[in-house]
Image 1 (cartoon, rainbow, N blue to C red):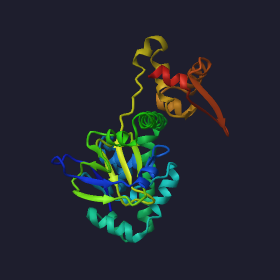
Image 2 (image 1 turned 60 degrees about the horizontal axis):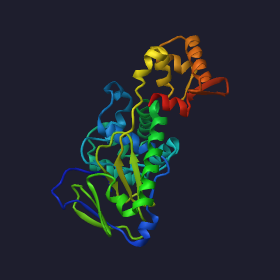
Image 3 (image 1 turned 180 degrees about the vertical axis):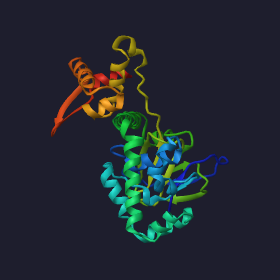
Image 4 (image 1 turned 90 degrees about the vertical axis):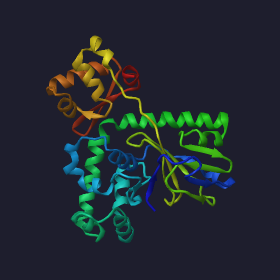
Length: 305
C-alpha cells in the first residue's frame, strides 16, 4: 500500500482511523526526524534546484507528482545509512508491484522492477546525494525544530489530553472519540487493532498530512511543521558580512576546509573567523582524526534566531 497524501475533499469524506484503548496506549511520536521520509517528501514537494536532477533522477522517477508515493521508499529508521539499507533490502516482489503502480515508463524503472543490482546501486547513489545536497546543509536545524515540536505536543498532551493533541495536529485532521479523521481522497475506515500509530512531524517538503497505513510495526501519520529559518540579517552591521555568513554556514557541522569552500573564503580566513566565534562562545570546535570540525553552540543558535 503506498504512502497516501492528504488533499482537499468534500466535508465528511476521507480516512477514518478507529482507535481502541490499546491503540491510544501505543500511539507515540517518532524519537527523531526520519531522514528517508524527509527526503522523499522534499523531492515530492518539488521545491529544489533542478540542476540536481541528473544526480537524483532515479529517486525523482519514483517520487512523482500526485497523492501516492511507493512505500518501499519509506523507513522509520532515524539513522540515514540504516534507512538506505532498509530501502535497498526491500523484497523484489514488493518493489516490482509498487513500480508497476507508478508505471514502468522508463528503462531505469523497468530495470528496478526486474531487480537488477545496477538499478539498486543507482537508487542508493540518488538517495545519498539527495540527502547530502537537499537536507544535509540544514539537518541540525531540522533536528532542533523537530525536538521543539515534540516538546510542544508533549506539553499539550499533558495539559489537554491525547485526544486534543490528535485533533489539533493539522486543520485537515480531526478527532471524535474513538476515531481520527484525515481528509484524504481515500474514503474508507480502518481499525488499528492494538498497534497504535507513530506520529511523525515532517519539517521538509510536506504541506498536508500523509499516512502509511500498512507500515510495520505500526501505521504512520505524518503532518507538516514549519521550521524556523535562521536569518542573521540584523547581525551584519555588528559582525560584518563574512562573519555572519560563517555563522550561518555552521548551522551544519563543517570542517575548516568545508567552511571556507561553502562561504567562498580562504582557509586561513575561515579558521580566523571560526576561532573568533568560538572565543565568543557561538561556535564549538572538536578534532576528528586529522580534521577540525566546527558547529554552532546553543548560544550561536540563539544569536541567529
